[in-house]
Image 1 (cartoon, rainbow, N blue to C red):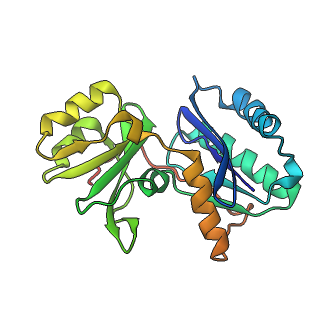
Image 2 (spheres, one colour):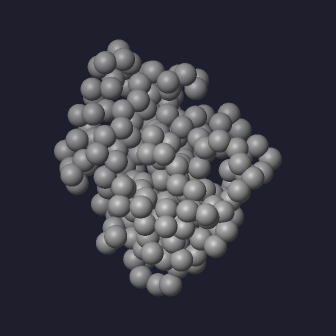
Image 3 (cartoon, rainbow, N blue to C red):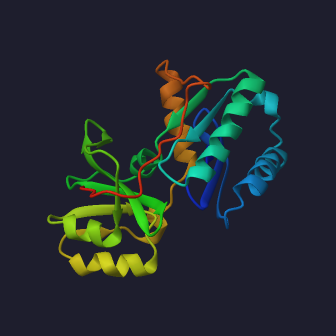
Length: 222
């Protein structure tokens, strides 16, 4: 039984999965109230499913990039559960979670999430050997900088609002923006990825696990 926690951005996600079978999943948008909302939401998930804390066998956490404060809150909660219950912890980069659930494609894909100050964290992926694999460093870019750098047909996935979708679609020949429902970063996928890591003998040290941060300045490239 894995508890997955994603607090990378204003969108918070929780999931409980038993050997890959999803028992509970909740995704909601908060107004910077991660500290107040996260613990009660976990308690509610436990109560609604009848799962007790001692039944957890692992905890998974999204590592970012994302908001500095929200990432720290989610990871602190995951570490606390790991240490208090003496269970493994697995950290997964947030953009990898977005990429994981996407259909196979021959085109490159850029996954994005909000990084603050009207900028996006972005990473390019290619599908190979049955998985989407990161093929670039994570960069920080405005929507205009992303648009300017899309010079060939490219799939876009992630936190993209209506206005940003319109701006990207100006490059309609190249920027293939997913429907909103396909842009949701699902905590159930985080749980699945953690299970695969654990089955392969992987896991992380709660003491050493740290969020992924990116600078908000610079000249990013994708």
